[in-house]
Image (cartoon, rainbow, N blue to C red; front, top):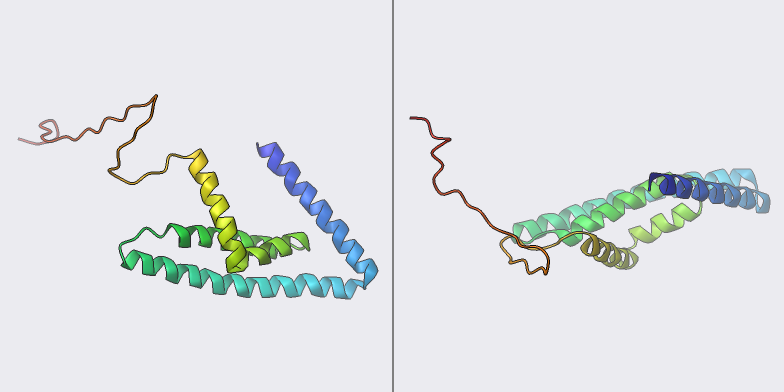
Length: 150
């Protein structure tokens, strides 16, 4: 798994480098460097704005005694977007900016939530679990004399 992530990271960086060289050949190297700097700064500012927006949405849900699942996933995606925008390159900037735009982030959030549901047991506390192979037994200690001092 780690080797696959490493290969993916190296491949993305090689494609990014090739794209930056191509852009430099089509324009000039000053434009290319400026593009990388401007997208990094603009992305950091937008990520900060969206991060605050996610924080406010999570806080509002908590004040209404609701679980802030959507704002937390949005915050995770904004964090990912910020990391992608800091990396120099064109493809990572496109994906990073897409994650900062709320409609595309909603799509990514739905996909991420489905991925999480498929891999983890998601449920509400106190809800019954009906599984064909597993049986969950809830145990509650009413009187534990071993932990009481005389």
